[in-house]
Length: 184
Image 1 (cartoon, rainbow, N blue to C red):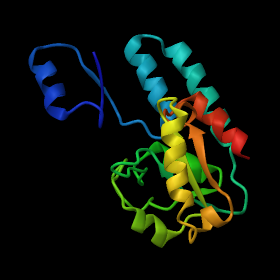
Image 2: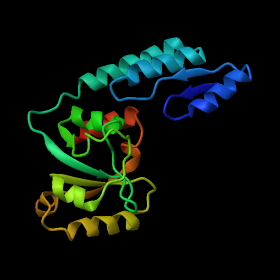
Image 3: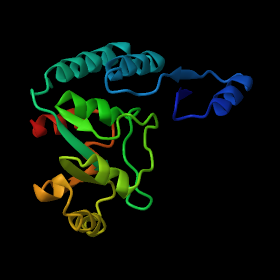
Image 4: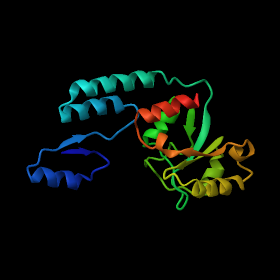
């Protein structure tokens, strides 16, 4: 069995171990550590050679994502009610930083904190992205219109409020790296 720190509760993992079931516990997935995470997973599954190739490809692709000299501040909406975003613990914060995007809530320790619209307004991001995680454009376009009514925001003034296909960004995977390349 394979468990992941942060995804599986410690009490669940301990219960499996008490039942004498073989459990491999992988570290929490992080953007910078994803290559090693894949290698560890491959080792646990007995597929080291394949996993090492995947790790090498990941590491190569990440190195190719050198950021530009400018930094753009970004707010990423994962959910509108309550308003949920990414914090400093999310792999997305590190991924965006790699391409010159600064998460306005990177100082929050939680991976996916609840925040207020007032807090977003105070931090006044250059861009607002609404992540479409279920393929229902009407729901996310409604959220976009709500943000666009707040015309004091820099992102609104500059026309940088948009709905983004969530599948590309929601997982720490090669799909994320390909999406990040398109941002450059």
